[in-house]
Image (cartoon, rainbow, N blue to C red; front, side, top):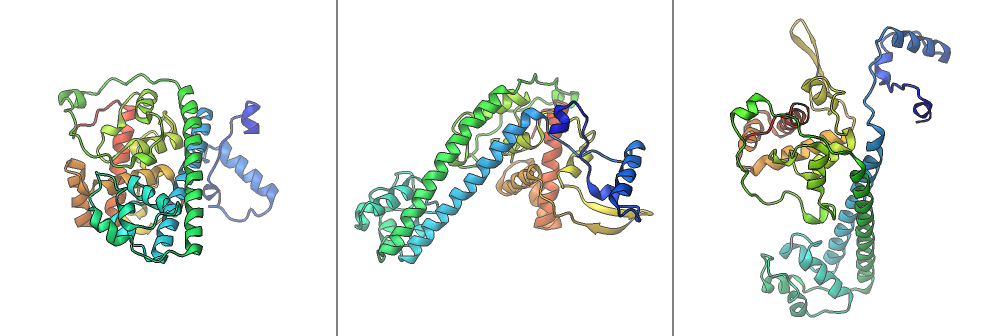
Length: 343
């Protein structure tokens, strides 16, 4: 950051590309060797997001951390209820919903009658009132109730932190310039896109920001990437926070998928695969595409059928990686060529 503020061009290089030649152990020889490699153009610079994306990336990673902590608090609530033999999680799958939170907070306020607690159920819940009454018969211990109260307080604190992150994120996204949509290619104009079928949202509303993130992302990217089946606004926001709007740093789809850690690492000599290695580094954008690929298991579309075919042919792990690479390539074409996705 200091060098860039002084106008110097900085290249962040993976050290694995400088260890091919042994015999340079001292610092002086190492810096001379790096100078020679850089002079010959043998050092490939790693990707660095533009400065205007740094704030978005920091806030989005912080928000994701608070979302994980809030999920952990829900697990602590469920553990406390199980210790008191209150099997509420059997009747209600999500304790963070309207019914679950209403019952838990009524328990902490002193209500012990199962029928009074079951009367707090939301009409949209599938479990009947009698099932909830049967699951609320337990032993009320003061020490476990104290642990439950702390878990609820921690959950409320995490939700407040998430709301603050949403406000800050909205300010950073508002500063980003609007992008004009690219002209569609001939392959997209040959077959106009049809109106996608309405389907249930893939993510819970509690995980989405408090503002209209989809409209903001469409303004910034110039395209609606959520038309791709399996990709939602949270996936697009994760990729935007990690890479930005300009994907010109990757010249081809192969380079893009390799940077996302979605391409196989093979050493080929004479047309034969010598070894197949796996890299264990974490790429948040690549993981976002992996999660999007897993959501296609019950999708009645071409991508869903493709994922189920790969799952039966290659197995679950390879199918997720292959399908994630396909989604990443579609996203790459959408932003770089203006190619509209047609199911």
